[in-house]
Figure: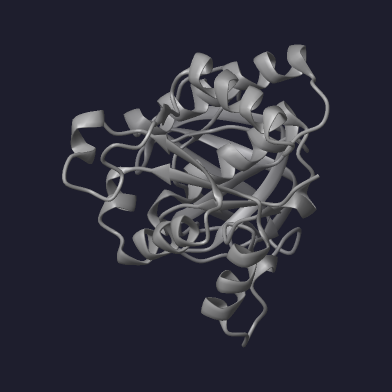
Length: 255
């Protein structure tokens, strides 16, 4: 399979992660055939990230741009795009902005595809096959995953902060608050957003990771974590209102 380079703005990391998951599960593209800096392991600690990106640009056969408002304002993203254009890479620009927003930009006059359109993604899927980037079809799985991706995209656009499980059943979230408890046997951390399909099936104003001290590591505001859960409960508290306690089965910090 040919290599694919995903160009995105770091402010749209959640979008990039959702799109990469769709490429893998919906189109059957192997992780080793995708280069995207949303994968932390793609850039070595202490390495020259600009040189790594330049090398990957040279080695890729397809270049995909996730064009958002933030992308258009990023000089680094536009440099990546210009480098790919200069190297005559097969270019797939996918947009979340109105087409008229591209007037007077380097993208003016290019054929675009809408990221929030299953029909447009289907056209890209066919083009991947036409140009030899993909070899086989998995049509039923593609449409199933395309619907899931569109739902995630709508949640991101609305800013609802709905956290979907990844293909391994993990949620990923940012810690945005620490609740000080009188009983120091417990740890309680507010996550940014709400988990999709909570085990309790109820609505809450906020979601909190709750566990025995020592069961998992201590956390602080700004930590990025992944976790699994099969149990949660919504209660009303005097200090934080109607909140969901999430009892993690597994929990790690993500660097």
